[in-house]
Image (cartoon, rainbow, N blue to C red; front, side):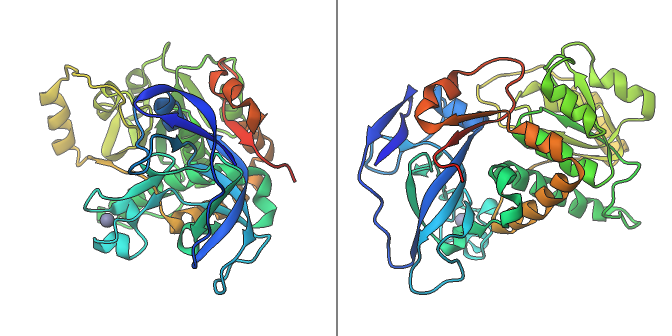
Length: 364
Ligand SMILES: [Zn+2]
């Protein structure tokens, strides 16, 4: 069985031959249909990140997957033929969050992540997994189900924002109508956050460095959000016109950006940090002004990582909503599909119209 691997910390990506996965007593055998490529994969291929399983040289890449169940153990709710999205993180087995299916909040840091940290990923024709980490995909969202993982991270982030905003002495409604939201970074996570916030009726500005005449910018505008080219317009200047943003989702991974954007927060505003800086950098900030604003305006800045099966299930419901409300825009996110043997082209693909790259093992 051929699998697409990296050998961290060496940069590069290649194909190696390996044995087929042996299904354990409680495991399901799943055939891979599609695997998405995101920024974390690109970092791993550059050698900046990633850990192979203990005692092995290679890490099979890929953590965003759609598969179909081939073989089932004696018990379990999933049936052969079911479409599934595997989750990414596997709990440490020691802490309370991990023991209760919420390894995204692992206390010990001893968790593993498929395709990222200590466990093989999904860029191979077959994989095995226990039911706890396989989420059944409703067949009517098959076409966009490869977006479930980034959508689930956006779902967790927005849920956490709403939960924290329950601190307000009045009730914050689930609808975000009239709330102004800024999404910084328009990778697949930023775009899923844009769809989600739009479907909750927020006024959304999504910024990245793309020019205004690219496909990504067009689809952001088409769903009723606004695209901001951060190379040309500073969001702080923009925020001055309307007392700041109530919600900021920061997903650029640039260390400087969150400090800059705190100044664009509204009174009682909240910023969730989702991007992880790849390089070690120091930045000079106006510390006194940032702290003063945060205190005097009741602001919150918090970090949020990963997602669990509950968020995957919720993401499926949202993807269905997105498909109903923004069908063309959602499908356009999946801009570049490649037969998996062309993985090198997929990873090398550049250009302003690349939004999401997907490797395909099997078409329906
Ligand atoms: Zn844990």
